[in-house]
Image (cartoon, rainbow, N blue to C red):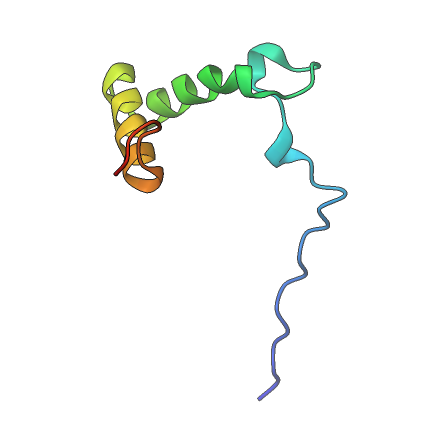
Length: 72
């Protein structure tokens, strides 16, 4: 039986998709202030209410990193 080799890994210098600016702002540099566009897109894609989706992101963030300014 012939052994199969794994598929080639993408070249990170060529694949810029993870860093693409959200659609309404294409052409500008990607930056954290554009995150609301991504959150709205994901809520729409998943078919969930935007406010509940944002609340879940905040809850997940606090669970993972804790709340700032507390001695937890």
